[in-house]
Amino acid sequence: MRTGSEPRTARSPLRIRFWLGVWGLIWAGAGTAAFAMAGRPGWAVACGLLTVVVVVDLVVVLRHIRQGPHYQPGRDVPPYQPDDRPGGR
Image 1 (cartoon, rainbow, N blue to C red):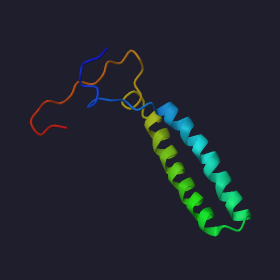
Image 2 (tube, rainbow, N blue to C red):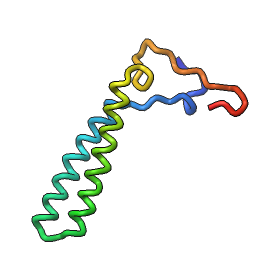
Image 3 (cartoon, rainbow, N blue to C red):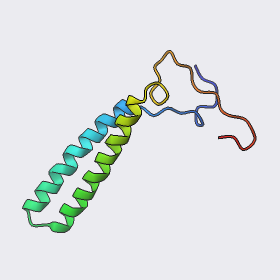
């Protein structure tokens, strides 16, 4: 059901974001290990920092998934109506 307010009430596809994060975690971890073994400490640190960012994102995504329909509504939950009050969010 489209209401015309989708940009303001968009929902994040959390499960897709989770699996893409897992994919990124695998590659960032592999890059960290490969660059560390190849003697490239700068690149290993960069990949290590990326690994930390991906882990934090995965924690946030899992937290939102576990919070239930507020963040991950099913198909039977209609989109949220925008708050049209002045100054409302």
